[in-house]
Amino acid sequence: MNEITVSAKTLDDAITEASIQLGVASDQMEYDVIEKGSAGFLGIGSRQAVIRARIKKTVTEEIKAEEIKPEEIKKEFKKDFRKDRKEFVGYKERKEYKEHKEYKKDSKKDFKKEPKKEFVKENKTETASAVTAAAPVYEEKKELHVAVVTEATQKICEKFLQEVLQAMGMGEVTIVSSIDEEGALAIEMSGDNMGILIGKRGQTLDSLQYLTNRVANKSQDGYVRVKLDTEDYRKRRKQTLENLAKNIAYKVKRSRKPISLEPMNPYERRIIHSALQADDRVSTHSEGEEPYRHVVVTLKRDRER
Image 1: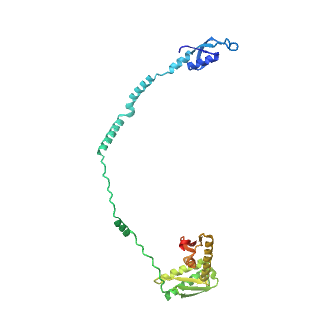
Image 2: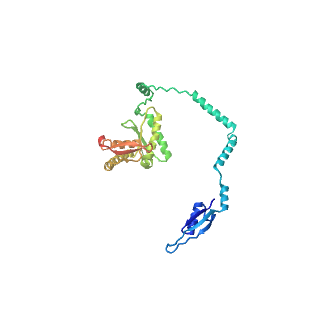
Image 3: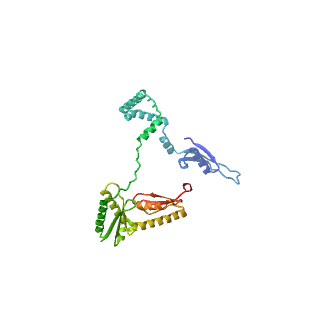
C-alpha cells in the first residue's frame, strides 16, 4: 500500500488520522515524522505536525494471503457441484423422480369430475308419519287393584311372622290380623319390648312389613297390601309427619326458599304430600332414588296459584 502524508494539530492527532485512513491499528503501521508541530505563543506562530505513514510490510502480506477473489470461489463451487451431483442424487433417484412426474401428468388426464349429487326434498308428511310409526308406544301404567285377601293368606302371614319373631328372640308376641276399610291386610302385634321391633324411625318395622308383603303376594293371585303395626306406631308416626309438614311449610313461606326433608319410604312421603295438598302457597315433590328418595317443599309462584 502507498504511503500517505497526514497533518494535524499535534503528533498524536496525526497518527490517529493516519490509522483511520489506512484502516489499521496504530501498531500495525509505520510513520516518519516530517514536522513535530508547535503550539506557538497564545496561538501565534503555531505549526501543524506532519507525518508520512504506511502499513507495515508483514501486515500487508497477511492481508494478501487472506484475500480470496469472489470469481475464484464461484468457479470452484460450480466445479465441485457438477462433479458431485451425479453421486449425490444418483441415477435411481433421478429415475424415480421422472416416473413420479409422469404419473402426476397421467393422473391429471384420467381425473374426471364426479357428477353433483342431487338432493331430493322429502315429503314432510311422509317423514312425520314414518317417525310416528317407528316411535315406541308406551302403555299407561295401570293402577294395581287390591285383591281380596283369602283366609289362607292371613294364616300364612301370621305363621311367617311368628317364626321370624321367635328367631329374633322377641319372646311371646300376640298377632292379630284383619281386613281394613281399604281392603288391605292389617296385622297388629303386641308384646314386651316392642320398641326393638319398631327400630329407628320405624326401619325395622318397615323391613318386616316388606317381607310379609312378599309372602302374601306369593301365596295368592292379585296384589295384596299388608300393613304391619304395633303399639299404634303408624298412627303416631302419621301425626308426627303431618305436624312436621305444617312446620316445614311455615318455614318455606317465611324464608321463601325450598326445604328438603329426610329420606322416607313411599308411605311416609304420601303423608307429607297429603298434609300439604290443600295449602295454596306451597307445593311438594319427591327427588332422588330409593332408599334416599325424599320430599322437597317449595314456595308456589303467584302465577301458579
